[in-house]
Image 1 (cartoon, rainbow, N blue to C red):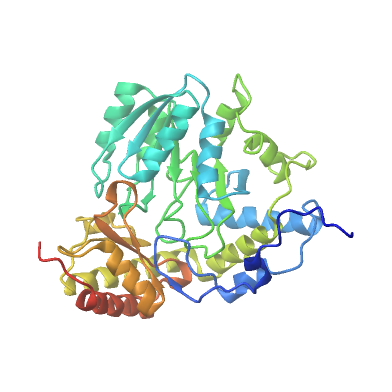
Image 2 (image 1 turned 90 degrees about the vertical axis):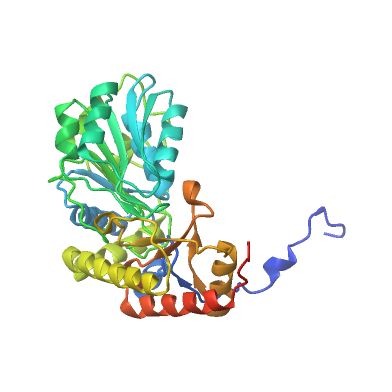
Amino acid sequence: MATSLLRVPPPQTLLRPLVVPERLLLGPGPSNVPHRIQAAGGRQLLGHMHPEVLQVMDEIKAGIQYAFQTQNQLTLAISGSGHCAMEAALFNLLECGDTILVAINGIWGQRAADIARRLEANVYELLKPPGEYFTPQDIEEGLVQHKPSVLFITHGESSTGVLQPLEGLGELCHRHGCLLLVDAVASLGGAPIFMDQQEIDVLYSGSQKVLNSPPGSAPISFSERAREKVLRRKTKPPSFYLDIGWLGNYWGCDGEPRRYHHTAPINSFFSLREGLAMLAETGLESSWERHQANCASLCQGLLSLGLELFVKEEKVRLPTITTVKVPEGYNWKDITGFLMDNHAMEIAGGLGPTVGKVLRIGLMGCNSTSENVNRVLRALRDALGSCHRSRL
């Protein structure tokens, strides 16, 4: 055309090659992606209803059932992050006027309560200070007082580094006519969880932590009790995209012919399939043991540096993400920035109630190695000796 109608020129930044630096991701997630999973995600696309893709989805479902230790038929991966799975769980379980009890000892309980309020549920909060956990007595008192239909609790609280004990909570909830909803985004594959044996009704996780896959797909499973509650709804779930009935059909969970629901992130599914395959090859028990051993080694090394662990009780320290108090006189941003600039390594500051109080170090999946424990301890020693320390 002689005269261009364009008024916005091509962005110069997009005319240059993409540059992505190499970094060791030892924050709370995402974690580094192994070459095998990268290669799976880089395969050529197929159609989202092609039989080969449906077969991959079936394999993902089986992998999630293994990782969750469940035989639930309504088991699948949400096309979205762990946040998306949290919304899927709450959107399907709750209707306007339902009562939910949310156990809050970090940011994820806060987020769940926020979402539930947007659904116009009656939200009651069970509170513990960051770094502490809930006892069965705490839970039972809340169940008796508020009589909820759903209890939300976080298994691996990545903002505080707490691993919440789950034994007996499912049976306790069912005795009080309540469903148990558990967030295991930060803990799956790194700490024991047994969905069926622990009588968990809805369990969800994410792809980007121990599974070492890119963020964007989120395993989730509904027990028969939870599925029946969804079927008894008086109203449709407020999100079509996250309607577990439609999703369950697309994932082949209801025995009916599969129908188109949405165009799934096919290559994310390829990656998730390989992440679950690597976990199956390693074995859950071996994975749990490795994460626990490397966490213990890291904690000992941090203490040797004169640092103070944020979670006092060893038995409830999250094996995948360790929280350590920001040492007196230091700015946490100086420490994380020093590691990024001088060691090409990410660790993170606090999140939500722990902002400015802690550093968070993640050892997840392929990143949970003794070599990485030694690397991050050497980097922290270097940072503590090099960063400016306030005299105040």
